Length: 428
Image (cartoon, rainbow, N blue to C red; front, side, top):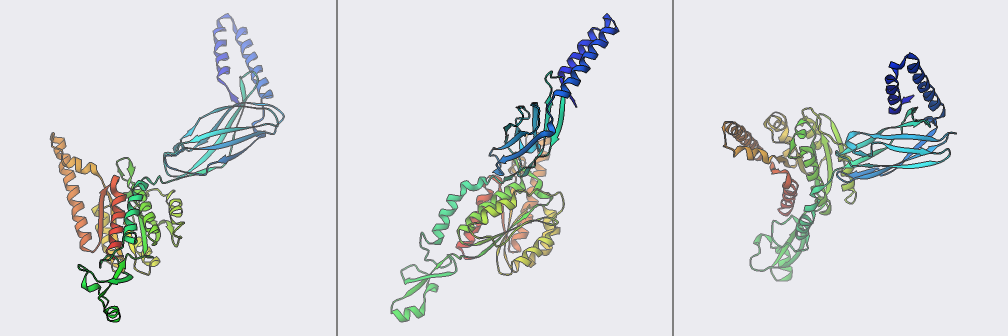
């Protein structure tokens, strides 16, 4: 049973009649109870409502979608009242409530608009219906469980860099012929020697057969292996600007995967902290991007210390051939020095390793402040953090690791540039 605000109002009016005598008060209360009983008897049964859903099952973060709730009255009384379709708060569901009037045997379509504010699976909680009687004093209320889920995918904001990277890739891959040694290691074709060619590219056997000096031309490698490793541990929860580090890493990983797939390379994904959270292996070049997006969507930072030994062991187990391993993590000294460095040699001995970390421009901004005593202390702390970051970066580079440390707005672009540079230089 549910009591409406009208019942409370009538009861309050009865209090004003109390000075006229108890009889008046009892009369009002009696009439009120009679009205409540009549409403309960005449209100439509909420249990007789049959519900189902249809509509969107996925969207990108920042793109609103609609989900439709179909409500059918299978009972013998008309159902009038209010319906609330409740979702997780981060689903951004509107409107909160809707009025319903469903005659017996009829159905109504109610639309809920979702504007999600977080990635992952946004699920419907329950549908609550309050069926009110003809007097509007009381009614029946019940919850219905109508399951539905909308998967909110990463927004892929770095897509804006894709045309530029693909143009550079086409240049490397043959739209502009590469005839210089060092631009890849796969043999492409033979041509006559011209002034300025590297003498190391001369093919002496072909020269002897033709009678003219002939050089080999090279092209960037194809069908190489790229492994994107996402650190989902506690350091990935830190916010850089308006987004967590993990979201910036996801965006950069998608751009890198899109470029690599177009280049003909195989792209795998591993997301882990103390356990493996997501994995993609062996996806085709046409399906790799949708597969990665689906795997990344439910990832959230875990407030645990990442297990570098687990990550390295998983990469070595999965990748027997030499590959480019891009580890998206932080450059915080403690996790690097005590976690990654002791096991890094096992990874660099078999694979080419890139560590990509999102830099926080706020730290550099604080380092330049000198306004008052508080600003000076903040600047000293920021300078120390930057010095520690530079020290860790230098240590990693001495181990043969390429380090990308850039602000979030250009982070994805810089990671893709490193991949293209390595491909052009034949380092993959």
